[in-house]
Length: 321
Image (cartoon, rainbow, N blue to C red; front, side, top):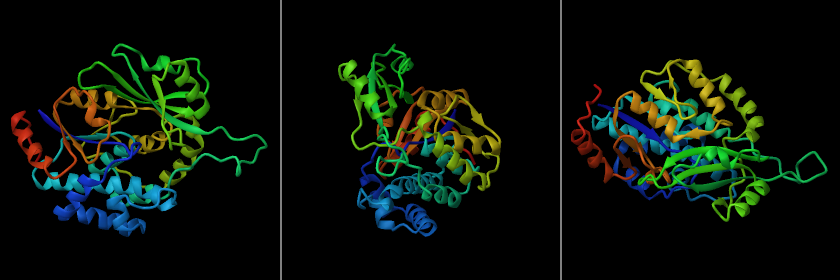
């Protein structure tokens, strides 16, 4: 039985309380944030506490950089306890962090990429065209357990399936995230009686074809980044696949901008590699409500570290030397 490290996405705002506790208690976490601050120029206080101005550009950058620093620091704490994973993978940002843990990408390179930020949609006042630009948005949908999420997007202009979270713990609800144009998502919400809920404050259609211009910008940034073949089993959430070559990791970083992600792809591939326990590292909104094909421990506060150690023995997981 193998140990898997799983890293969540930055698509949902997380409460920093558990991260602050880790920061106060463990030198490895403080070092991770100190490195992130040195590499990006962002203030450690903002990175840890996520307490910057929400409208400020540095605040937007602090979210992914802070989450990546937290995930990497907490992974270092687990490794110091002997909990070195046999495999790693993650969702969106988490997939890039997993690549660092697997040895395919340097941490400094990842932080530099995150500091470049994402290409945001043109707003009407800056769009070089007479008509207003259609606003982008995200939405969540809670379906029946046997529903096919792709049916929500079938034959609908401007609506895309961006993340399949699989089922809730009891396998009674299928949870998905949609992205696209806000007007199209609001129309879908009205037609489904509120089954689809448009997210307030989200203005980027993540993991959808609408991000194609951002992918091309990202491709230019990533083209100069050095990658190496993963030293650990690295599982993708873009498709049910194990990434074994540096160029596959580079392609994942690039395609991550526009391709939908799936918890099912990730965890089923890990299950095929013999995962007997998953440690979900760092803050994990939504991921903590899901069904998994193997036992999991959410390592989102220092109190969870002894639970993770105990779970290794409980489930007979062998540790990597």
